[in-house]
Image (cartoon, rainbow, N blue to C red; front, side):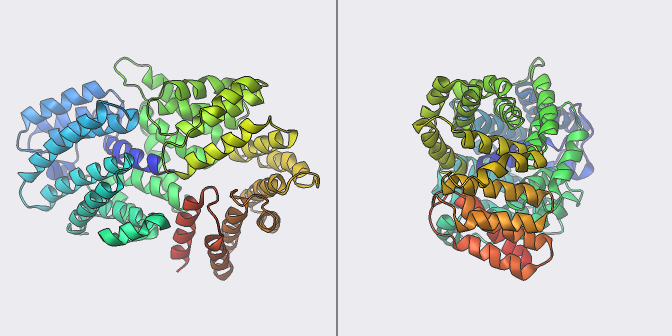
Length: 508
């Protein structure tokens, strides 16, 4: 999730400033922020943004370079070139792209340093530092990232809240501070980070409605933070969907919307968006965007279309030279192969799963791959996978039907039955059958079987969600606190802590 957050927030969000793939006029507020005082400069900025949104990165670079020559007193050209470089560095994760970004970020800093001490000039300076901080964090250079992030947030805090674009940067800073995992809170305190996810969402929502130069960026950031840390409670996905629907020719927006549709269990809609992204990326001049393969493989996997999913998962696992999504994609390539009956190929994929990053998803993928490699899938494990897919693609009755025989089979290990109980509870929760949801979550929490599995602690968290949705704040708080108190380094512990703390802050 952190990889997605950084990539989407910094790279996909700036492209949202263009309303369509075709260029359109730059708003007066954006022209003021960028010091674009000529129509020619504004037109080049619009051209560059349109090409960026279409993922035609070479064409975007050409437009922004021309803008730098046309409007030498503006930072817009340097900002555009730096944004393209950041896009490539986070998407491709290999040389020479990171070095190119840092060089252009240095150039943007030099240009920004010559701007007057106005809110608009300070905004450019804050944005340059924030971009550097997020790139450093993406490379897991956390100490340097923390120093840069503190600098950026201090600059954003110095901007007036009456300026919508200040709210955008402040909202990012508050949300990030609130989402710092517990084991890194000492670093946050040392560097002066403060804020909550709820406070960040509030500012991002206000920025999205404020009509500033970064209003559309705020829409994207609002959706990302809301989906990643707040269970989509604030309506960010709907806002993102409106933006994507208005710009059907953009592979970037199609990809981003598809990912968040997957988090909302809308696999069929997500597949349609990813197919549109595929079509757009096949057009002349479009740059590679490998994450589409991974997500398309996953969306087909969730629909039990294992043979169709495998080529996409395999291509990403074999050819992507970075580390983002690699552990999860390789694991699911193995699962897809095994579900089609090819155990030998599945074992080869499982053996290749590695945790390249200190992320919950990578660690869980490694543990799962090790267990899968040790022995072929049992009928119960196949049923669990099909039940998970049914829930993840919103086939709730099918999920319950497939999982119930596993839950009621007393001969199966506790860990297997706990997973069945947890996943059945999630299906009942989605159906708003509160009593059955809580009953199944309690079964999983009482006998999780495996202290490293997430079924027990996450069941407690979801009990809190059920109570909160029913309006019982006291019971919800108690359940969230119980979840936070769960011992051990179980799977997805960091994510649970982030979400439970956000929930407690929301309840007051």
